Image (cartoon, helix red, strand yellow):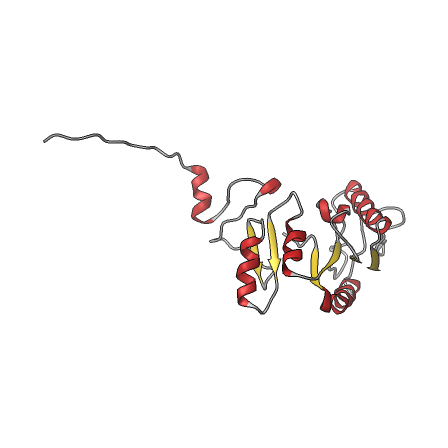
Length: 202
């Protein structure tokens, strides 16, 4: 699971976007078999084309590229070959863009800004998918309130590392039904039998 969208409070949006763009720009893109690499290729040429279409759609609707935004050709990969796309950070994004309404499955981090907690929850829930979400805050009351309001099967609280063997894994909405792992995952392999016993005489 990887974060698909970033919703950032307005007072810290500029600082967050700058730091995320700097970190993304420092990632090494290349063939992992050829040397130190942070990010390899996408799985197919069609996957790259989908990323390009999502980025183009966002730009056409007002987003701005802070870093990346194009294919890259690491050493040994001649243009126009390969399926490598630069780690990309976009600002000024919103729910009217494909990067917000569909799963990109590529190295694109769209950033949207919110003013209020209610607006953030509404933006987060404005998707047909519902596998995992994340909330970062120092306010414990807000953490519980937002986690309860998020329409996702998994919520990471101040962490992006949410997978664990003893925890139930699964989503809501178009992210599926049922759970893997933990006690809840066993239920998928069981058949329930209801036994109703009437009065017994000695």
